[in-house]
Length: 226
Image (tube, rainbow, N blue to C red; front, side, top):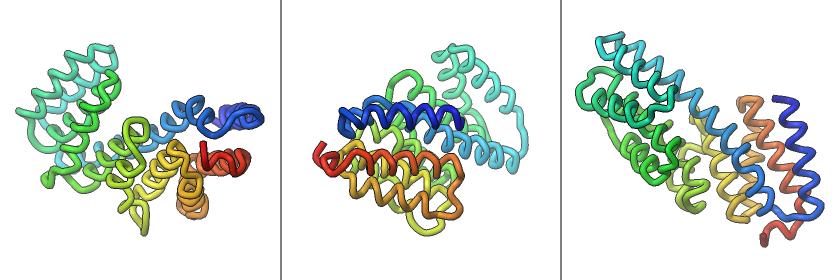
């Protein structure tokens, strides 16, 4: 990871000599968002397992694992069908876990609109534990960085970006990336600074935020108009 970060920084510095911040976004958004989504997926995996564990294993466990295996084998349509069946017929934690996984598969299929809709439905469902609703909102926010406006991202996660919310730094990162894409460097800088200045920020998230701050600083005042 350190080697990847060093390489990334070197390439960014080279780009900055001739291009403004919009070029950086186009070149590196996959790296940035990919790393951010991994954090949320890791949290989702842990919280999902915790929720599953607290509600005990059931006869639907094998069905859920079978669906995951189909997805790993790139049998996406079969996996979706298995997850939809589990959502309808399952009990305990499995229906909501199936909904979350099905939404992720829509993302992998390139159906961002469908994935956003599916995650939003989970986030709005009061029968779903609050931690999973918040994770669904974060997934929506990261999808909206490339498929919406700053206002769209803010509407999803800005309330989570303050105070002591567990996902506050993921929310700040999504907001910073969206502001950066929109060319609002002042907002982007503030969100990334909030991440760096938070003593509880995970190191990899703080490192990404610092890279963005360095990028913004190096791009100069013209970036605000890019």
